[in-house]
Length: 117
Length: 110
Image (cartoon, rainbow over all chains, first blue to last red; front, side, top):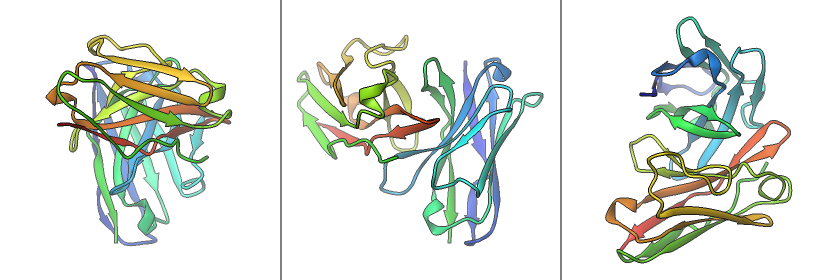
């Protein structure tokens, strides 16, 4: 079965960096586009990034553009999110999600908490 | 891109129906059929319930249905059950390589 497991969250000071990982299993990872979605405390879900199946195309939400970078290693079935210049408002649970056709999120991980403080 | 607008809460007794609205603009919901809905229990992974406005993934009960009119999409849960108590969020492709989510609705089964 499809499984997505995020890791790398924790407490980090403002201005510092953190890298999240998402380990995928149960499907052909290299065939699917992937996303990062976050949920701040008491807030709704917010789309963060998209990366194409081969890693050649990335898109970013306005709130993270220029600070966050998404990448993937298809040989390791792993998705990454490099977060730089972190701000208080980046505090959230970060989920990785697989893209279904067309343009929805068909499987999600359980999330990893990032606290910027 | 602004978040889609959902009511903060909705409720119904077991066996009743509840409908959640999701209002966007002609740039997202009104201009694209990639509206989807997610069920989210605290501490768990969100679950896809509806995609492409009204399609159900395998395993999702047919008590869940979706529709769209203009810039507003809706999720209806018929025959409410205790396990349906959760947060529900809508989503739409917003054009220009952007995706947008709703503000979220907490459904309570009375």
